Length: 329
Picture: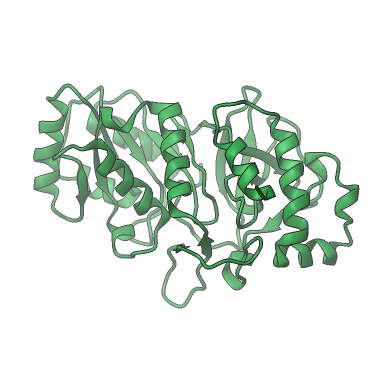
């Protein structure tokens, strides 16, 4: 069995192993077998043999996914996940070796945070994503919808009356109910309706997509909490370039899955890191990115808290507006 197959078998088993050990092993492999990453490391003048700690690993700028095919080894992709973008902008592309591996990991992470998908009705209000056929979020939510085996689970576009009817019907059942929606879609929906559903899980995935004025998280979540009569608004942190997700059950504090780690880099020096509680740029290690690049320098601003949760505080000024819970707060 080659390195990546062995790595995946161990990564997605229930056996717990040292994250840093995994990350360093994957770095050594990708530094040699990922052509784009190898060139970037060489350009920086870094010898992979000198990298002995996670904080020494160079992170590939996320913009490389817009201009290059970032893959480890050589293979034909099953799917290309593509980011959303305004007309004329260059979008990111994530070449995916196995869609089933992505979906299995997504379901595993969801189960860790929320339980089995069969215990839920999933009502999805993701209009801007449905307009494309290559959204990683749509693939994941569609998998959850199918896995729920619920006749009430499904996608909704602008059919708010049907959504309102099915939401009430689902809420009266014995199952849990999750309403997952893009920010502007949820705002459009609650302008027409008001609910009293304290047990409803409302999960916003971020993104105004140019449809509405950007809002701070606290203001936005206050509106949703009042309109649905829920104690907290949940959020999902994921993006085209990642194959893992982090979830927040309120206050914008995200819990990490076993496959992810967040490091906060200094804004002025991308090769040094901030201590716990200090703001900076978000670097992500996503071990599920075995076949692309697991070490990504994002354009998000954030901080890691003492309880190992992290927060997203906004975007770098010169970066594109993106749609995966990246609101300024």
